[in-house]
View 1 (cartoon, one colour):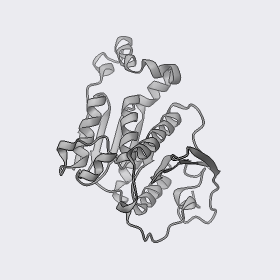
View 2 (tube, rainbow, N blue to C red; view 1 turned 135 degrees about the vertical axis):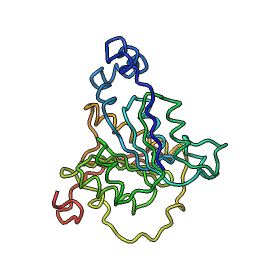
View 3 (cartoon, rainbow, N blue to C red; view 1 turned 90 degrees about the vertical axis):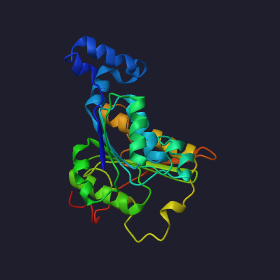
View 4 (tube, rainbow, N blue to C red; view 1 turned 45 degrees about the horizontal axis):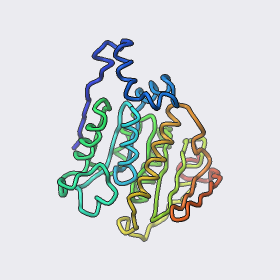
Length: 261
């Protein structure tokens, strides 16, 4: 099942005139000092796909909506469970047992009704190709490697940049993958059979929220054309002692996923 929420567009109601645009920019007055009006226009014109709207992806989606991204394409399956609520800030306690995506879309629309949102109650599969191709940038926030690898293949095939964001316990990692330029996910973590339970790793909400904020920031930087995204580099951050380091990344010339790209 999918959910399409178009919202009201003030600029279209006013014919895209200066008065309508001024009203719209008022919401983003504080960040215009950082992005400029052209940067804000780029955000409004952009589509970001967020694969996974749990503690990490949900936080990224929330701050992209707050920043004024034009369209969000969201994918995540299943219903809300009690253990989700320590980190999944788009979910409501009174919606336990109900579909996660519907609740997440409502939460985002309450924050910013002008953002166009497509929400899909689905995992990432080969059938997700259309979502990836329609996005300007993808954020990978899935909880298991099979879906991450599939999303990586789709982004490489469509030549779409992907912010690869992950956490485990108190540790955070982040990089931005540009197909044909940087290493892809399979270069960084060669595919192999996984013998771990994806729902078994420990999660603290503040840690997943931190990397979600960083992923949203990477997306804003890339779309608005500001700063230096984490290209050819991976940030590793440990939240218990706030130690961090950046690892240089290189493509694998024999990578089965991206060597021909």
